Length: 73
Image (cartoon, rainbow, N blue to C red; front, side):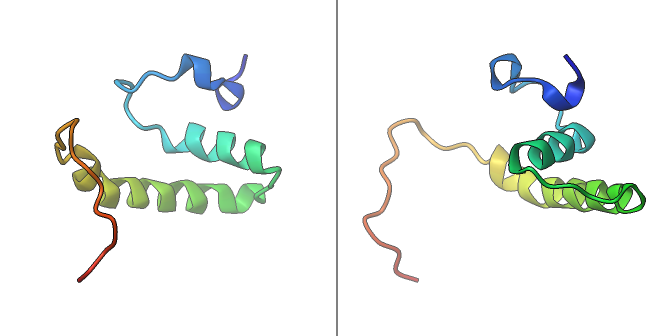
């Protein structure tokens, strides 16, 4: 099985984020194509998105935390 066709069953949360694999899998799942000359830019943008999101993903939340019924700023 190729990296781009790995299934969800082989997902390991301890494996570092690989933007090339993520982009390939997502394009495959959505049935989209990206011209080869643009692929590096798409991968670079997903690396940026991941870097921006990582602090939020790393923030610890207790398992018994209840969601707010509505958002009030």
